[in-house]
Image 1 (tube, rainbow, N blue to C red):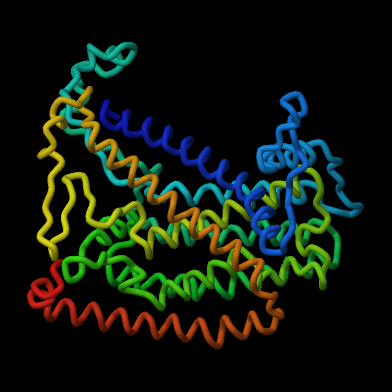
Image 2 (image 1 turned 30 degrees about the vertical axis):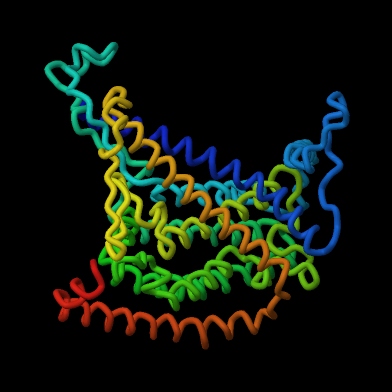
Length: 421
């Protein structure tokens, strides 16, 4: 391993920790945000009792309920029913929560950034020089990626990780030694297996249009402009795929109106009925992490990810309106630079990360609204919808995507001239 690879590895590990902290924080906020939103929908006040009494009874809109709920769950008794498989009973929530975070490793949170400073010999680096004699750290052109793992098969990695979620559900239902838990686990497994097929097929159209399974490449290619003004986002090129993907995603994470595995009126609480304390909190938290993952994938595949229309590291460009503006035209750009980091380009990266976060939060809000707007489907309706409606439509979408790709390849020069990309 050379110095460049070592620095890249350190930055990837650092970004993995940052992403973990950001997702965990957002998931914690969602536990409060969902309760607050449903209270507004149902004309109630919502969580507002937890407070800091030594600061004039400070409640902060009920945000202290996040801490209060966590403390309450952690201090509750961990009850394991008689006859349960204890190790499996313990592993189920660990698998559900742990696997939920792994998929974020391939999500690009912001655009690429390049450090342009100077090459640093190993002898000038404290502590490392003796381990890398004669080597050089090439900071004259060092790319920085805001992605823990830039895999060429990023989409397949997300699907593979999502498939592992069913193991936590099955283990929880089987290990609890409860017929209602087992029934909920069987429902969940049937539902998740059924919709994984349509979920994967709905993404094939996106792969064909952008000719890649790398999430970073897909996001970058969505930066093109159709007719010189319309962003080539997935929602424009694959609108049917977005509807199918979003619906299948809700089914995969078992959210209302597709929460038959957790149907309170039928099977009490489903596969995690016999869980309490910290284990119950882990199942609840994993549901919000999965919700954030679905929101992130919708933003990455269909809404340009970190792309800001008309804005790039080079400047602002709107071909149809003949608007061209480079950041280098700003008189203070050259002066505002430290250690090879151009502050204006750093500001663009931060804006891209903020825009991506806005898209993710917007999708989270939509999914919370869907939960408290539509009634639950019956289990037979869920299965019928998946196999008789969504699966055929996903196949039709693949045929349409193939047709678009063939037409685009055959008339590529004409299309590039007319559409402007």
